Image (cartoon, rainbow, N blue to C red; front, side, top):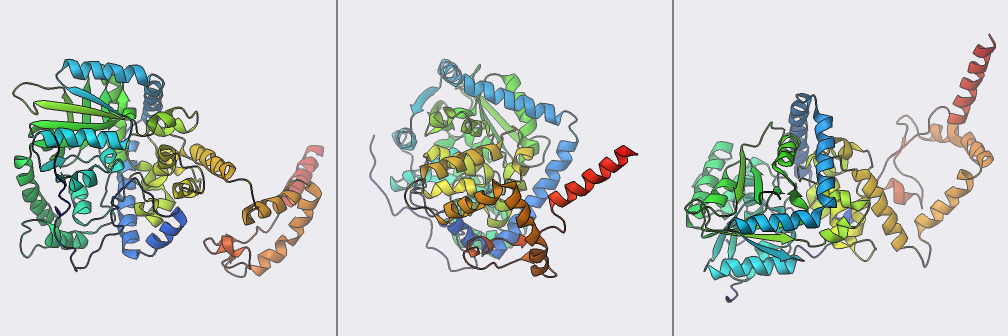
Length: 510
């Protein structure tokens, strides 16, 4: 069935109130903007966003620490979760075929989509065949990855986000800033202004009281739930041995989407599969504690095919590749597919906390986005700005310590950096090439390196009382423009080692 385009189907004109999109949502989310350093310079100037983000991530970190401390077997659970995902990725073809058989046996219809275009076309044809001009959506990162909302909008179907934070982002023509808390960069005053200006039937004299804002959103969404013929979801997990899908959420909107409409379309990345219910139980302990600092999610919804007279009577599962097979073939980078989208790596990342999710210009921000996005895009050369994302890290290892699936994000970051450098090698040497070549001279000669240590006291004195260099002369300005450099230590390692060796030898003689 075909439908005519309706490009004029929008909300309201952009308001002139006290809010503005942090980063306007692109017409095509698959297109890339600018390199990370340039994007980060822009977001760093948004002081309100940084305050909002810092407060929210600290709160989540503290809650998570409390819940993890209650689990004496937390590290064993992490190892179990990592083992489950490693097995699933090693046996992915067989598990996906088992999933298809079980979904089909229980009345569902399975579609395979190799890329974003195929997935969008399949979902649109299903929705259009039911005469839908509106659909309701469960929070889904994979539908943002493929630009589903924009695709539907251009073809006359408006997709309503029903997660509160996603609704805030959608109403403000913004982009999500966090995997779990998409509107983490907004405070309640900004949310009030957005609701007042953009939400249909917003109450007059709406205040910024959270309870009042929530009540307004609930009334707005309840009408959408009761009217919708078609719902669209993703899934946190697919359980192969029964054909079951799982969604975790905190507000009940997902439960409404997954039970009220007549037709349900679930678009799921192929990496979300686990073999059995027992595996689901392990990840079910790791995910809520890592994501929101809760022992369990308020709403955990599982559905298996179609049940006559109960819930949607037509169920479609779209299994999406969109670059995942290429990631799976990578011996180092494939561990990025173990991600369960908890966002814990973002909550501990010093880079993310300062620049926010918009600097990554991707549905997947933060440390996990820095390794997943370039791989999904195949971005390993300077021609694609996404290749700069692996450099958006201090390699402090906090993300690995926090990751419930034990994804070694720093290891993958280093590997992707290496590939980017190697892919861009050749031609005229860069300033970095020259600097590294110069550094290799003292680094490869112990006598020269020892002599270089003699200038450290002079450098320490030049650093002044603050014991920090803020500005270095050109060409070192390329480094000091974005980093302060601490003064050298009072004593070199060689000097310290000589003293301690002498003291040890003296003690041994006694």
